[in-house]
Length: 218
Ligand SMILES: C[S@@+](CC[C@H](N)C(=O)[O-])C[C@H]1O[C@@H](n2cnc3c(N)ncnc32)[C@H](O)[C@@H]1O
Image (tube, rainbow, N blue to C red; front, side, top):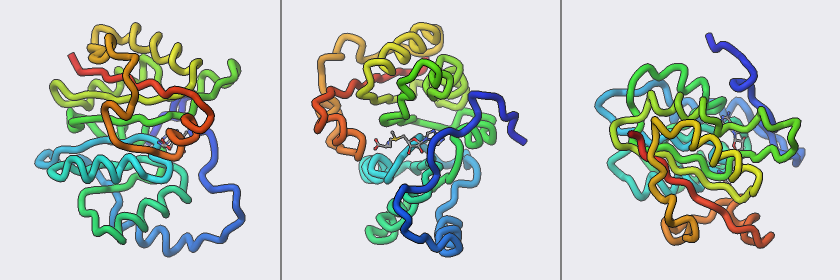
């Protein structure tokens, strides 16, 4: 059973604002076919955290066909979109976890991820909500324990406040990770990956330049 301390709690919506009815029974039925259960040591996994509508998971699944992507998202409307995409395109290497990434980490007692993606985590820009931010040094160190040797964490954000917060978290976890692209922060996400998620597009449309942090396990 999860110890629900503050950092483990979930914030934000699990359903969209539109009043569109969702057939939850059908959703859970389809979800059960693609549900992530636990890490199988014979499989190489990528953990994709907070996937929204699942664009990153589709991208990663196509890029790394020999690995299984765990798409971890609590937002049901987004998971439905991802499941439709998986079925339409007959994608075999995505598993979903509908819920809190802390549950996935809690249930993983060994090094099982080759890569972790955190694309546009909720920035919670107000000071009084800062404790809700996912990318803290404690969280990075928690991930460290489940990462395989030399594996990486990729974090994207377009929030200036979150950039500062992430820099502080990287500094505090400097014994655990090498900040690989420290000297390349002028590069764009597009210089690394050809992907546009909903929040990437929002940032570009509002003329905010997203930053990408690449950390490698020491
Ligand atoms: C700002 S959205 C970004 C979505 C997507 N990655 C993109 O780039 O468009 C952040 C997502 O993280 C999800 N999220 C936040 N905290 C989470 C947690 N603890 N576990 C799983 N998902 C989480 C939210 O539900 C939300 O969909």
